[in-house]
Image (cartoon, rainbow, N blue to C red; front, side, top):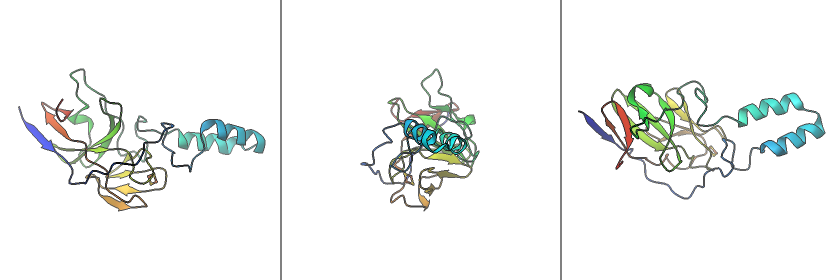
Amino acid sequence: MSTTTTSSASTVAQGSAPDPAGHACGGGHCLDRRQLLVRAGTAGATVGAVALLAACGESADSPGSGGGGGGAATPGADGSLAKLSDIPVGGAVSATAADGSKILLTQPEAGTVVGLSAVCTHQGCTVLPDDAQLHCPCHGSTFDLEGKNVSGPAPKPLPAFAVRVEDGAVFAQGS
Ligand code: FES
């Protein structure tokens, strides 16, 4: 059995509320579906509305969303968050913690898994895997695979979510 414990060097940044609507376009910059449909009906911009709905409908549960850098992890029956083999080396997948919070599991190097909150430190949108980076679809912040800011308006790194790797699966630390 091999056990690897990794936590990001990121400082924990609490206080940014998750998107209450549960979609990827929070922060007051994206209309909800009802608002969008109403506006589409009055403006007759059905095609544009459909395109916007598709963009706003992306979530951390959408495999491959955010640029194809990783999809969503499949939780194991053993309580694991993901199989290690689900996480691309040099990439990331979205996952869901036991309390329902959105997280990201990255694998910067083979066998080293970093767990991060997927709640953007800018305005709380869900950050998604994007190849070798993590991308917030709301205002374009990007983070590296350890949650550190690369670009965009997010003021802080993504908070760490402690995980451990055991027998080829990733578990929340303490579970
Ligand atoms: S919520 Fe604005 S960049 Fe993420």
